Amino acid sequence: MNEKSRKIGLTVFEISVFSMLGALMYASKVLMDVLPNVHLIGVFIVSETIVYRKKALYPLYIFVFLTGLFNGFGLWWIPYLYVWTVLWAMSMLIPKEWSGKKLVIAGMIVCSLHGFLYGTIYAPAQALLFHLNFKGMISWIIAGLPFDALHGAGNLVCGILIAPLVSILKKLNKYNFGRN
Image (cartoon, rainbow, N blue to C red):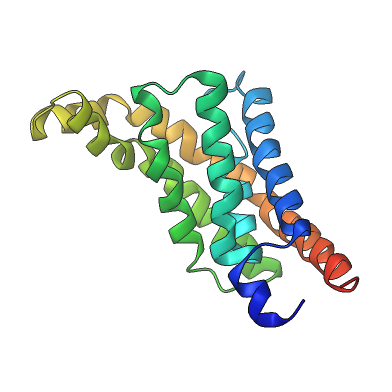
C-alpha cells in the first residue's frame, strides 16, 4: 500500500487494532467501576493519540459508542461526544517523538488536568440539557469538585502507564508495517 492511500483510509490492521483498543477502553472502564472516577480511559486516549494522532479518534469513538450501547444513550451520554475529544486535543500537543521522562511527565499532566477539569468540561452540556442558567451551571461544577479531585488524582497516578503503552503500540505498528 502506498503512503497516500495509507493517509486517506484505514488498513485492515488499523481497523482491527482500533476496534480492539476501543473495546479494551470500555472493558477497562467496566472493570474499574468499583473505584469511583478512577479509570484508564485517559491513559488509552493519550497513548493512542501520541502514536496514531488524528486516527486515535477511531478507538475513542468506538469507546464512546460502546458506552452508550451498553449503558444506554441517555442525556448523560451526550457530553461523551465531546469531553473525551478535549483530552484527545490536549494530547495532540504532546510531540510524537517524546519518550522517557518527558513523555511520562507530559502524559501525567495532561491526564490529570483533564480529570480535574472533567466536571467543568461536562457542565455546558448539563446547562443546555437541563436549562441551567450560568449560576446553576457554576453550582453544578462546585458540587462536583470532590469527584473531579478524585478523577484528577486517579488520572495522575494512572498516567504512569502512558509511556509503556506508547512503547507497546509503537512496537505493534513496526511489526505490522514491516509485513506490508
